[in-house]
Length: 427
Picture (cartoon, rainbow, N blue to C red):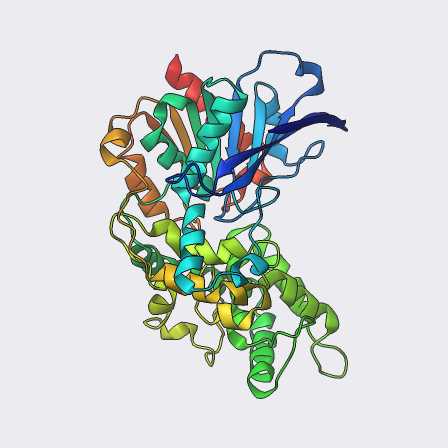
């Protein structure tokens, strides 16, 4: 284990690195590095403050890199906590998984065995090891954004004794929902988001159709050599659940063509970076396995759901964009995902019998939980979230359509309200 403390404007940071088993069922086997960054207000660096563990979204996303005032929720949290920003295993500085690692596996099953070590059960064990090793086993609170909310309910299921209180933003999962259940609900929501986009920017219907026609007729290459297909172009809708989602796409389309009618270098570079998964390949590789539990098999649920929604076909006008959905073709067509192809396919077909959630323990939960459910959330279905809210003891839910999925990131009042909900519940 190693630690390093230093200051940046407005914050005192301590970086921690420690070894954890790759496979927690084989604790004496291969190890990987777990990295966590402790953040504290300089004026309170010597105070005996409680800890708040931030569980970021994903799967496969690293934690925030803090600056003074960024992310905005951090200032709210630092008024009463030391904040722990843990890079989930396989991301950031926690032994990041890249294509070169996946290319080294001799078989698809070996690669799938490796990827299976990066699911929720292992992340929670990492957090517990961190809590016991660095913080003497003191209880701490958690803040779970998006997939971090899924992790929160796993934490409450298997180690509630570790938790003082839990805060969840846009991340109450369906406790028994399969990937098929989720994508049956997702496609209609993404269609509605696309229709809202076109209603706001009707001129973009023609631009999108023009791009799709060009991609169908010509072999258009991105700067990294990948072919830009209509399917890949459609994945730009993945951001439609974040503000200012529509403007981000509109202004990209605004500069799509040069004066002589070819796709601009600016457009092609932006499409490459926005759809290339260079910084988060595990996000794509693990996306559907977050629903694979209690005998569920994901088996490319998004692809199967798409096949029963002809409005998402590549020859439709207006062209529908797709959302947080991973398709088999992506692991063949996208350079950074190709080394993951065989292992991800094997993982998609693997049966996972162990549950992520203990339904009885959650029903009887005594740890205070405050959760915001975004009514129009494109990624986490509000209906499933509200069902879960009614099945978890001591959980208070705030339902709002004021924010998109990233309300926590955009408005510090979101976290303050959750803090107030728990405080009122304890009075």
